[in-house]
Length: 249
Image (cartoon, rainbow, N blue to C red; front, side):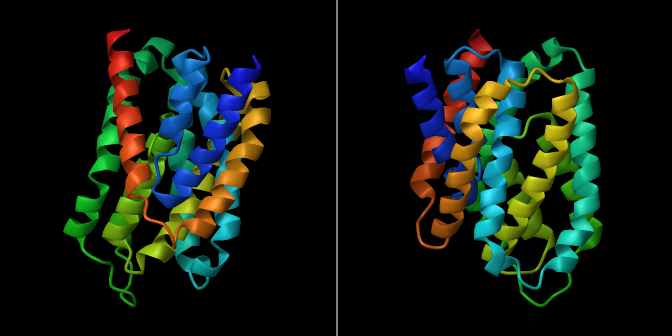
């Protein structure tokens, strides 16, 4: 239906922007797909694939912040690939009823994590530029985050920025750019796996991919200029509402 198409395009653009500004944009697109009739598993894999161009847009818009971070990106790429591969394969191997059972809890957890992100950031403190990264913490934590991202992916950006802020010493804006690259890597691996064996709705992906690409690029440009507080509240409210709906249905 045209109304459904228009809804998905608008939500896709907003999702890409939210991912760049605050993280958690996939928690907006996931319920939108549910609302137009997708079952949870199909909505999850279609959402994951459709988010990939948004991360490309984010990466293109964050080139200045990525300057001088080649070593950090390369060191975390391998564990991100392995973790995403493991999470994506788990989604395909485990019965669909397992995903249906755990996804309400995952949505609730991701929403709450996004909600407490400001307090978590203050508790961890501002990263200190110039000090070496704590790779003994960073690499295993990125692997675990990537497993989560491959399996579900809601609020993956929030998880990644928390991990980077805890274990990598740098300005948060630069770490946010690394978050975008790792999100892109995890998304690409998931895309390949899901394309081979998951119920992806490619018509919906064709509709959403340009929308998330535009949203990601715009969000990256706005990330240093706008407060994400209002967007964060909106995503948390939507995510918790979706979680409650999934729990009771």
